[in-house]
Amino acid sequence: MEFGFIHDKLDIKILILFILRRLPVGIDRDRLAQLTLCDGGITYFDFAECLGELIETQHVSTNGVLYELTEKGRRNGEYAEKSLPYSVRLKAERAASTMAAELQRSEMIHASHTLRRNGGYHVHLRLEDDAGTLLDLTLYVPTEEQALAIEKNFRENAEMSYGEITEKLL
Image 1 (tube, rainbow, N blue to C red):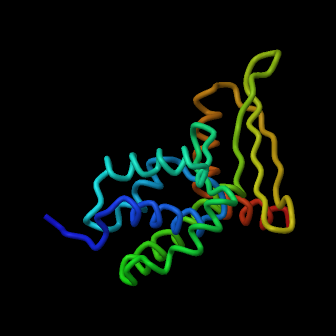
Image 2 (image 1 turned 180 degrees about the vertical axis):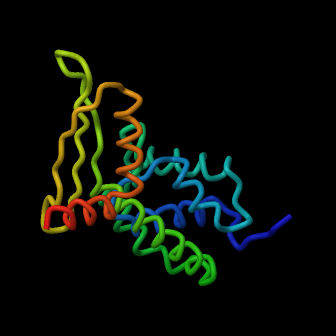
């Protein structure tokens, strides 16, 4: 059994606020739990209870899918985070940094499909950066399976797809 530095509810709440403060966008419950459980002293049930209390006290907001800090949570978390053990802060910061990069990337990649009136599907693909849209492409495919496969592949390889399309057109 691994023992961690964090054992009481207040420290768990501060850790959750610490993590959320380092993310550029909202995060789902499973990913937030993964980041919070970086310390061996925290159980999933402790995490779930503390997250629920942070929502009740309006430190964290949720739309039922994503969780993010409120302004109250940002202020209080910033004030209290130095009370966390340094090693826990360091480990959580590294994990949150990696997750922030993943979340930021997924915010810039959009893939969806719609059913066409005359049959088949339109697959909509868009890649953005901080300055705006880099690629906005709509394709026709005959089946939904193809549409889903294209969406999945684009999400996984958006930058490479953009580069290859640009190279072919130049």
